[in-house]
Image (cartoon, rainbow, N blue to C red; front, side, top):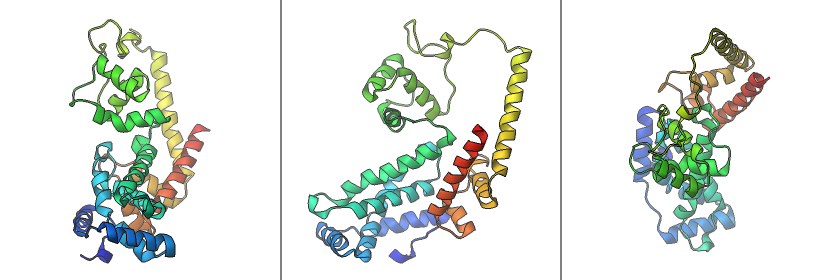
Length: 281
């Protein structure tokens, strides 16, 4: 497979073909990279830009693999990372004395981070800078796969400048598990729900209110979907209203509608904003 034959739709076997193809692309020497970067900067040489991007696609694949734990399609993560790589190539200054790979990793990660924040489980889990640091660093700060104890929660909270409660809540969301009712550790105080949950069963009124709320949410979703045009509705349903593991990727929908994956993402984002507005109203 040649440089120009890299598959554009990263789905199924084509994703594996893409990964294999980019791993075979040649590295650039420091002199070659410097020459291409100067040609791009001084002459706006698009062929030079293409060669710089191609030679670093394997880096995007490597970085994207580190974010597989968030339940988003690998193809989409790679696509977002590639956007970050192209931004890095455009902004790279060859006279600073650093290699492009060192400069590009920041842009690749930034683009993937933004994609995860926008899309992960449709939940606003990281609305501040410190919470975003927690979201993307909690796994690496944990030792092993066991639940955090009180001391570990305190250390991570102090390190990332967040509240201990936020550390435990984020760990629960990322782990996809239930919150333990008993306090964490051996001390009297803990952050577990047992300390603040009321010891009473829901009465008939609470049950009725919960059912009415569930019905309203269902009707609100139906109304919000009905407000979309046919293409937008199809994209939202294919991306977010399927069984786990069956959601369509940006590339699959791009092929279906004969547009770019970036265009599908723009339509999806606009549709989501419209739906949230309708449901809030």
